[in-house]
Length: 390
Image 1: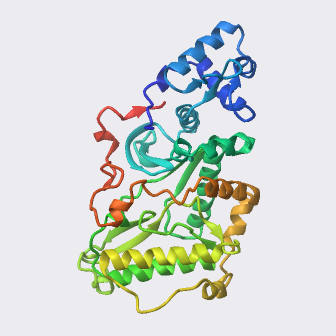
Image 2: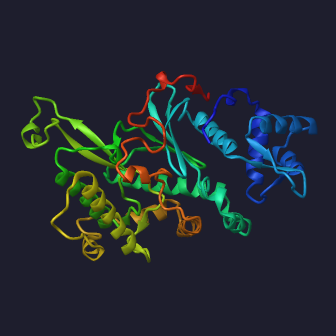
Image 3: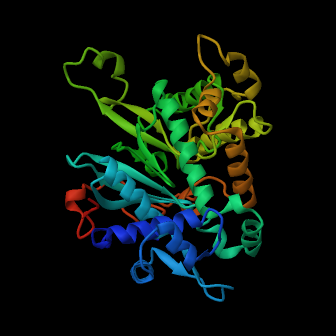
């Protein structure tokens, strides 16, 4: 589903209270009974509650469940989106919403802006969007686990990604700057870069390959494995070097007159180097890069590996901290990690690459999601979708 913020400005304070009440009731009810919504909302008079329920249902923020044993409603993705955006509005993190610039199986990416017009990125986790449509067993799985709802898991994915992005950014890793987090969403800095999967040619494949392998090893040194390190989750930023720069002589091997800097994104599958399947995740990250460079750039490294056994030797050296431990201390607990991992395995969620990625892997040059996501579009150029949320 696409984010549609047109109705935000028309919601009354009573509507927001009722929408929040449905969210709170969803923690313990798959379908929130109407009387419970009224009780949580704390509004005087039943007519006001029913009017708000009708308004919210009309624009798709809540939905009445057919064939339910009692009269009640459930929160929709649209409703959860509005609650998150309303939190950002109150914090002055997001003022307007622009174009959608990316879409994966389990997330949507939008350009947003603050009150000063500074562009940012809003990532909305939508775990279960694909899985729930096709696998009946998934619905049975959720029915038996009150903590296993799509809403809770999407929150966990956002919380995990924000926690890892924050600690990586603080320790100098090339990642977007995390700015805010609410429910199933994250606001981060906008990086004007191309996904590696869209790049057809680079001046020096060996140098870029070495940089990426070095990043895998550096993550391991700090106790982390990305878990989904591939062309879909790596951005390539081209840094132009001024003609009078003292670095020009050093960087002159790049015909473009600049350097290529990899930026890592997407962290819901990141694991500790102590994870039981750490070797599998590490080897998969390395293999993904090797295979992509061979297929796309016809580059094959003369060196084997690297291997996790070698990477483990550098863990904690040179005053490097265990960032997996720091993330756990920040609030994303082992219990949360186990719940999210169990969900992702049960739902066969294997990264957040576009659902029709096979065409790209076979050499198709078009964007997988059907959107023009080569370069983020300025929100001022967005036709009819630059919607204020304030």
